[in-house]
Image 1 (cartoon, rainbow, N blue to C red):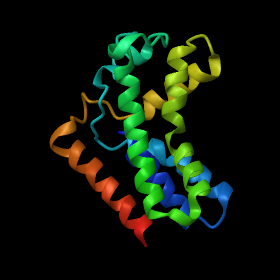
Image 2: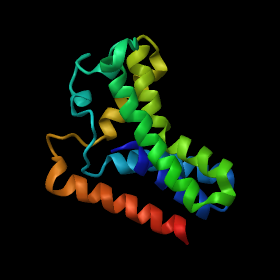
Image 3: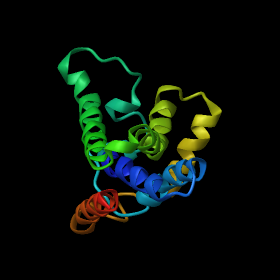
Image 4: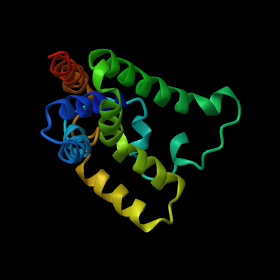
Length: 161
């Protein structure tokens, strides 16, 4: 799933949570629940075994071509942050924190690709992969893209209340 829906769902969860620790925990766990839904993401090769994807290789950004994957991720995150802050301007720090926790599993996944010998990150990579729906058993179309848009709309509706 794209990072913006993860961020927005985390932000929506924290606005309804009775306390901060529970809200952050639910935002974190929401990531795995959303990854169980059919969805599209802009790095379909990242699900394949081996270091075939630019983000799975050691991070060395040289030139625009090397920066494109990181720019996609940055734009995706910025979109989610901007929408969440526009919808919840009074709770900025809490919303940012919850959005961060909701995206954290993908950040840990990225770190596991950068630090393949780290046992905790490797364990998380296995867990994330086991919980993540694969493109082979849930193609992005016709369900994945509409479900991701519906998730985005639902999170925005909750934030607007």
